[in-house]
Image 1: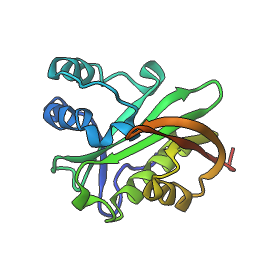
Image 2 (image 1 turned 120 degrees about the vertical axis):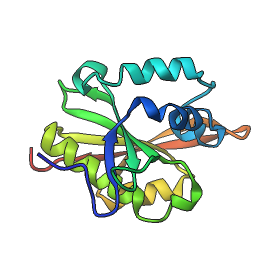
Image 3 (image 1 turned 90 degrees about the vertical axis):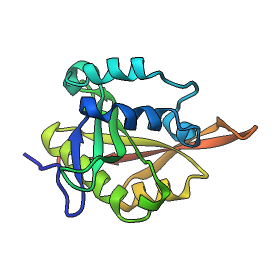
Image 4 (image 1 turned 30 degrees about the horizontal axis):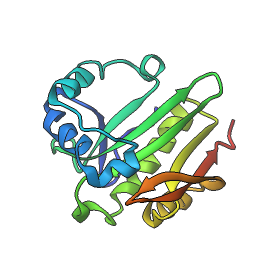
Length: 177
C-alpha cells in the first residue's frame, strides 16, 4: 500500500473538525473558477457532506483529502479524485491550496505525486485527468511536471471576469497497466 505521507506533507481523510476549513474553502470566491463552484455553501450542507465523507470512493465516486503539513496540523488545502469511473479505470484530479503563502512551496507537487501513486497503485487506475483553464499557468506547470499531457481544448468553456476562457484537458496514462 502506498503511504499518503510525503517528505513535508500528509494527506488525510476529512474529519468533522474540518467543518470551518471546508466552509471557508468552498465559499472563497477567488477559487470558484478552479473548483467549478457558482454558489455559496452553508455550514449545514458542509456538515452533511462531512458526515457522509466515510463513504469509500466506489460508493461516493469521489475522494477528497485534506493536505496537511503534519499529521497533527490543520488542513492547508484539499486534493480530490472526482468523477471516479471504476469501469474505465479513470478519475479527475483537482487541488487547491488555501493561502497564497503556502503556494509555490512544493506542497502541491508533493500532494499530486502522492495522489498519483495512490490512484495508480492502490486503485489500479489506468488514467487521471485534470481540467485546467489555459490562463492557470501554475496548475499547468504542476500537472505537466508529472507527465500529464494536454490532449484537448474546450473553447470558451469558463466565464471569468466577463469574458470566456478556454479550458485544457490534461491526461496521465498509467503505462504499468
